[in-house]
Image (tube, rainbow, N blue to C red; front, side):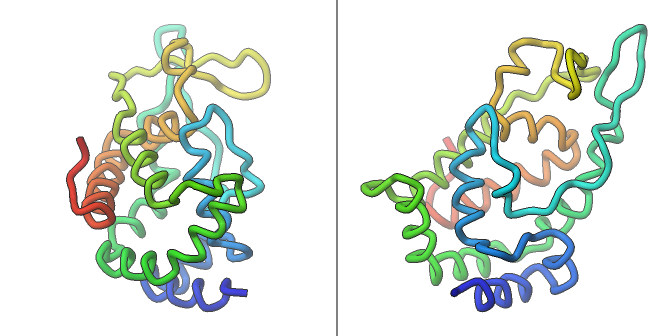
Length: 192
């Protein structure tokens, strides 16, 4: 029942057109909770994802006989990262605190009756910030239908850490700065 009110408030922060282009409005708080909780996992259910599908496909190039992640793959995420960068983190945290009882209720519905969503949010931010930053070129392989990282250590990373790599260095730097700012405001402390 809170979807309309929450989406309206979030749209004010993101800009109405941006919110409409980026967000899946149905059950958004629950979707956000599920997404945060699942980012450190190997796979996520994208049907429950709060953000609409990133346009285009993974951009690859052939280089010296290898398939590698193209330098311009990060351009696919430019809109989302640009909107994120423009969001007033203090205003977003005020909105988060106002709706926190609903975030907490959604977290409990996911099977965490004793846990606190804010604790999980901070854990996930720290997990994302700990993603390795491999040097280019990042080799890929395609054993079946989808590309995978050729390096087993990279392929073993969580969905969220792989996403940090796919953002590309420039977008990743923006996202990391934003995550650090968000962490400071929800905890009062910097990331370790």
